[in-house]
Length: 144
Image (cartoon, rainbow, N blue to C red; front, side, top):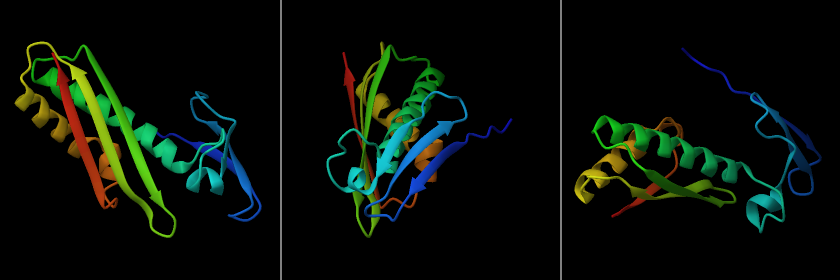
């Protein structure tokens, strides 16, 4: 069954000096988040950016896909700690996303862990949506 998710944003002014606000999302899980051009290109100063939200979505989606893949291999993870860093270059867009994951998975060897991590990176719906990003890297480390 398909699901729709909606976000509503209000923007005031031009790109460089204007600002916006993520007013609401379907679930009500968050809203009231300020966005601006400086938050994309400088230190965010308590504002978010589309790239930060994409990084959060990618880290969450990858973790879910990885967890599922590991469980299907018979090795449900105890814990996966994932970060995603989206690099934004003005005039070019998102040029790179770096995924990093550290996992505790009882009974799994490193080779199988690496293979499953790569499959999750390739198969996660957000990775597929971001296929135009020139580089999506993955660093995966299995804790014992």
